[in-house]
Image (cartoon, rainbow, N blue to C red; front, side, top):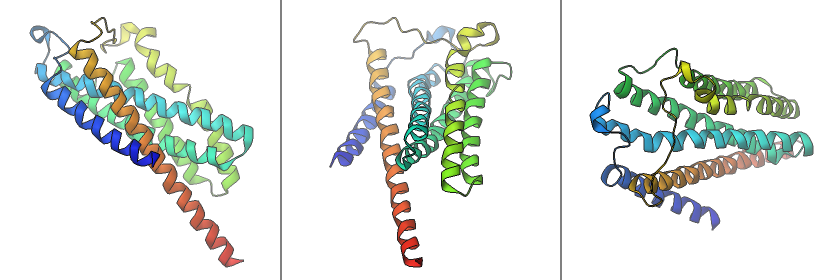
Length: 228
């Protein structure tokens, strides 16, 4: 029942957020100073929530990894795996939406010396490596233990990516999001709803992925019993 409510609410909020972005929200920049088509700057409403959702997914990997090493309970390993897989999707969407936005704003899909772009790419590759490590180790307990350590150490890339444009502001053209708007402004209202929609989407996908993994474990357990 709770899952149905989660999925339904996610769908509704996503549809509302799409409507608001295209028919209600203002362009978050002065059109006169926009480097490309000003309408393309509405990607901001999707790009920022997706990026923060990726960070949140990797934070779940971090916490679940700690809990696995502490308790040795398989449920935490499953949660870490599920969050990592969904987080990688969101990290990829962050890079893709950022590149599309960059093409309009800067005239290029990728500015090689921009520190935010590069740290975001490194973060994406860290968690791709995390998933590859899981595939490379067959023994379940060893895989879970090694993945947990990787998930904890790899999380260092999240604050590094988030703070990169503040730590190395001379090597970036990426804007720093500083929202100084009225509480009920169209921009802030749309952004808040988009954050809610993508956070719920993240929760829905992780929940769905955990369910699939639990079904796989039950199937494997049945096979083991039949072989005994």
